Image (cartoon, rainbow, N blue to C red; front, side, top):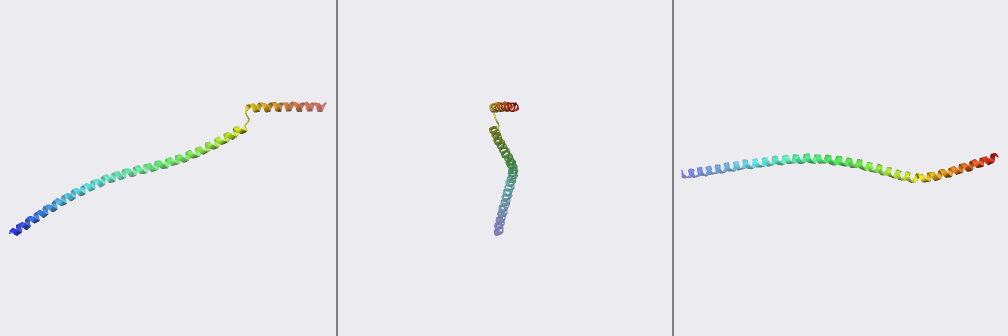
Length: 117
């Protein structure tokens, strides 16, 4: 009976050991589950943030392209204005050419009058 009692104590000790290990295992699994839930929440948050930033990048690229086109259009207009200014006479030139044309018209009128005499 001493052997049975010894075996029984060993079995009880083994059962207590297994119960403690099972309890610790449950606690460990619960901690892992809680941590994995936190990680999944963080993952979802980061994923949403990434998607929002990707959309923002796309919007900014589109805006940049529009600004480049606007810049090119303004640059062309500037070049056209520069050319027009170079080709267009200033007021001093206009007055000078008017006086020359007026003198030529008077000379032509004199010549016609002389031919009619």
